[in-house]
Image (tube, rainbow, N blue to C red):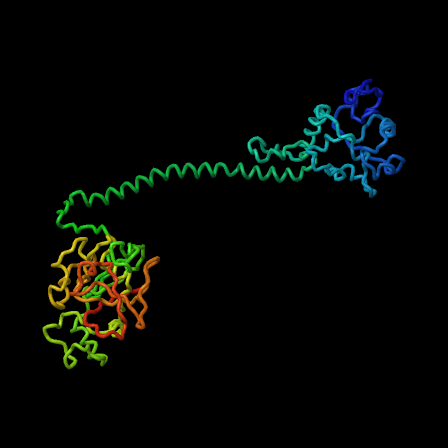
Length: 458
């Protein structure tokens, strides 16, 4: 007979092909009895057992196995009958359905594994059907829950699992029964939810209708009675005599100015408050009275002329101006702050605009001297007298702009002054013109005054 597996000649009476070892029991003249495979007690002694106890499948003598199998009167052993454990176990080891002697991680059905590993599933269909029926009848009197109704239980329906793990499947059966028993409860909950949703919408609609009924007869107020909506964020409230300067980015300096006012460059300043006018004689007299400071040299007997009470105070050094600012809880402005307050983000040439107007500035020598504060043109932030009348101290040292011309050397500490005075012309009364003067030690300071700034509260 030709073996259908390897195509070589083999005997008709044997269950395994002598050449390849394939299990061919039903493919040749000798047909085995039908019915489920039943384990046969394996011999614990004998030459075959002693020989294969520690050997692999590939090393077995299939001729000797065949002779032993034929001697069992056509009752074919399964794997347990040949591959016995090394330790001599009791007879119950062969009736244990779990077949602990085999641990093949890749096999999903131990009943499909022969000594050669090549037995065909179709050869055992009839036997599996009979054995499965017997196993199900012995597990439980009640038929398990339909596995198709619970897809997650499908892996448990494997024939071998049912045959070898009856006690485990009993637990799965109970779990399936519990899951199915919950379905009426869920159906009732869904029905209740479907009824509650329309009721909830009805309740909300009724509440809204009752609420809106209050406005049915309401009359529309007149436009004049409705306050305007602010389009801009509210500004901080400035202290008395000061204006709020929001700060921001601006182009400082100009190519149209003098050599030390070049080149223009971008600068950022933080928000601050600035005095609306320069410090007057009257205000500075309060400082002298309170602190005992020395009066300006131009004051006769330490008293300013009554007619000049609102004139900007002059004749004081940079240090005296800084002391006054500290006494008021303020400080002198930086050069950048002063220029930004004078020209704003628009880059004005003069505080009021880009065209010279002699009526808005005390400059050009037409007045022959100082005048009262608050008469010059206002800057974008409502600050007066930033062009002409008197120079104003800043807190900045005289330093060149980036890539700009250096200041001349001086033995005095030079400070930047801004705005020009009554003697300045149109060119030096601009918002970007830079003057400089010694902080102390100059011959006189009659043309220089100052104003203060204050930081926003934190």
